[in-house]
Length: 239
Figure 1 (cartoon, one colour):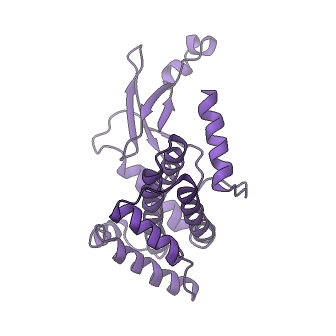
Figure 2 (cartoon, helix red, strand yellow):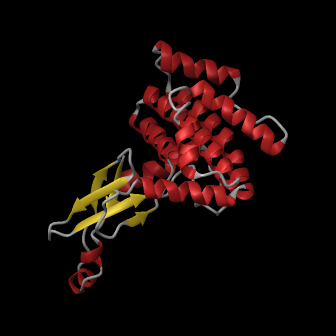
């Protein structure tokens, strides 16, 4: 998965208006910060706004398209886990907790997925007085067999698992956006700030991309994973 970037100085120059610069494709980065230099020597720094769970789910989709079904299951799983983290942070920041304190406390469970799941379950219960919908035991067993026992899944198994992850996240994502808007905003802002260097001396832009799971999408459309795969395959073939 690569992201297209163009030089803003070239784009808005007189020459750029008549001959728009071609985009430069860069590899996806874990920190969400992208820096590149165009052919004319202009350096552009851009931070990707999307949260980790959004990007990871798309990575799973592209893995399906490429025929790497085990890797797809791993990415879908990571997307769900990072969504639990996003939920916890958004709720706590909505309540006015200090961002640094939340981040420091999360480190206590950052290496233990079961503790993260437990934190999510009970915080969800506190917020909505009901237990959250989770993956079915069948899919949890399937995930463990793939991740921990070396099972090689078929395409159908990977897509079915990805669809269940999608169905698990979507209704909760809607709810958190509606119920905790300030917490969501603070979480996104903190992500953008963390992606910048402390000594950044040049302007830093932000970029957003279309993802299957999207905080920014207000269209109300909820395509199935298969439909989203068809759309991504079309763009891949086109370019």
